[in-house]
Amino acid sequence: MIHSTGCNTVRDLIKDAIGNVQIGTGTTAESSADTALEDLAAEKAAAVFDGTTGEVRARGRLTASENNGESLTEAGVTISSVNATRQVHAAIAKTALIEVEYELSLTVVDA
Image (cartoon, rainbow, N blue to C red; front, side):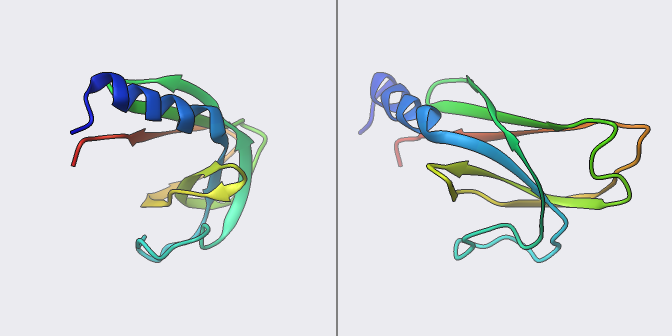
């Protein structure tokens, strides 16, 4: 069993290694075999902070002037320069009228 302090210790190791939030336009469903986004459109330095016990959150934002005209459909987080997560979602049509902020959560649990 990993207790709360242990979960937070592992969380802190992951938090210190997170580099970027990756944003893409791929539409294939995510799988455990993924090693990268399907179609990388942007990579933003992650703003990283603690969530609940064992949880770390990473945020990346596209400004109004970035990636306009793209249909954003996937996001992930890099840990030590390697893509560690990938999540596919409904399309967001990026225009100059909006900023898009992704927040991804990674949680260490006792399984």
